[in-house]
Image: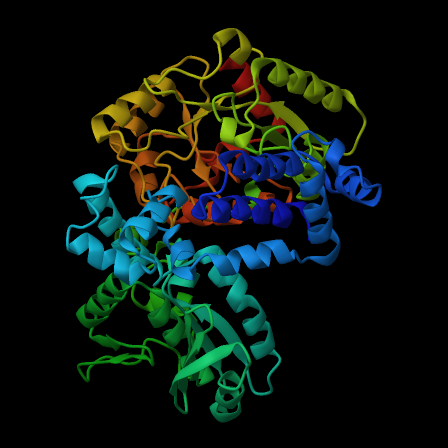
Length: 580
């Protein structure tokens, strides 16, 4: 096991012990050990495990040392397995409900013998939860709302995870004899932040063996439909995959039809009808007996671009097919030239082992260089984010000096900009003094607590922070965690106007669970002149790849290269940050 896996298990043990009403000092010991472990790099852990000196690390005692060594070497811990079995599975599942922590769940179990989610829902509907001391009507309402959200979340999968699921399946399909073309469609191809199912299209004149292969794979937990040209399977995780096999000459029509949103497709069919054609997933054909086919007789492989052209439209990228103005723009041939992954020159809002990241400064800078980037901004958490091992002023100054030293070195790393992810405090004040903030190249301002303020108060809080002369950009504007936590209430329009008026950047947080600011807000924000930075919010070198998910958001939001701060070359970025 690596340190992230071990730290996660230690945190889980702490939660399970809390369910059991264990001594708070014991619980805290596991939490502290998890944080101490995360502060070490893998080489240090290996050395300490081999020399059996883990207990020399602050926060890790002899008893915990033995448990960590067992997990590190064997990947198993009988104590942990026994503890998991001692806590009803239903109680552990309740942790996914927003606002319900281990203490409250334990109270529900002790007082009302609730140990499953259905029992919890019934108790709320009967008003029994609100009668408990420390709960009340508001808590009961929040639990019911959380249960409803949980139900909706279970129907969707993050784009990032769905893409990882489908890629090996696509590769295997491409190897099958007779599979001429293999492509994804649907919301996954449109790059929606979450998807309900996965659509795969295969061009072939021999669908039977392809269908037989698809419905006989180990990853297909159940077969929900099986036909000659369409089959559906459900994975163990719950996601459904639909496979359609289409003659090659119809492939372009099918790909267009099964990619566009319902609203986009309705608009296309209407345009076709107005021109005397009928458009469906098989063809674009004359509908009034007067028109001829819009395509040459000898043209067999008709592409999506050919179909759009026949309708008098410029080719519309899949990400824009949402009926949000793309049809009108395509009619005038005024679609944006969307930003590409290769346009990115560097990234901001990244964390290191100094706070809650898993890699050192140098490792992050080297990984950025390996990505082909010229620069990386480090923005570890500020002092109020104690849960994330936030840096105090002394540690931040030490980090600034370390960054300067690395930038002066001849090492093959990206240029490092010194920054901070500075907490926006309760009334909009920042977590560090101006004297400290002046020493940094840039400042990301973010909210990490008090999410339940009303819209007016939260908006005022964020605007005050954005108006601070030393703030550079706003991090994860709404605090949402897709399929986990709803966004806090904000007036997005007022925040956007404030950022534009003050020359501030609002990031696209590319963490697949965040993707915040939402793509639906970016087209209008772009028109107002708002600049973004696509930031991975990376807590490890691997997380730098999250930028791809941020590019999806930017493209769905109609953004071009010039709208994205971190497409700028190093010299231009340096000048902007220095002048700002």
